[in-house]
Image 1: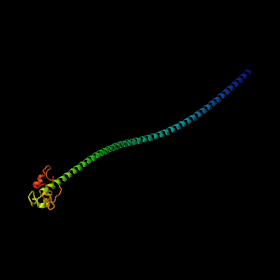
Image 2: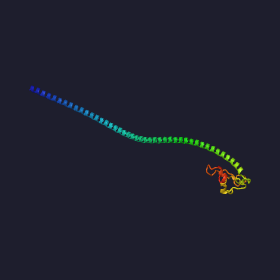
Image 3: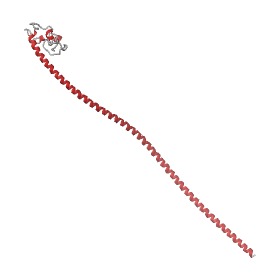
Length: 227
């Protein structure tokens, strides 16, 4: 009986110990489960935080992409403006080169015209001097011719004053009165050079060929002017 009691006591103590162990095991399991739950919750919170951070980062990247796209569009627009300005500058340089070339051509033309004008002025001065000298010579020849003419008229004039002929007293000029074409034709008639002659002396250019001897005027009365 004592052995049975001791065995029953030992069995009860074993059962109590087993129950205690089971209780401790259950408590430990519960604690591990709570720890695992807390760890999972913390991990979920971390994951949520990381996801939020990732979403925020994606938003920032998207905004940066939009800003970069806007900047790229602005850069493209500026490049187009630069191309337009470059073409305008090139056209302006072409116009400037043409203007400079035209100014050079105008300057050369002015220089050439000034040179040509100076040359023409010098030539005109030379020609004017030559003409003046020739006019002086012609005037001197006219004076000499007038002198010779007067002396010849004095020798050839008859006693009838200005109406006489060549060695024939009283003979008038056969070319007609001093009016109309006859007057022009007999403007230098030697027979009509006196103060009472119907043919007053006038100085005109001779219409006969140059080199015709002046004796023709004295002999035949058909010289239209003195040679």
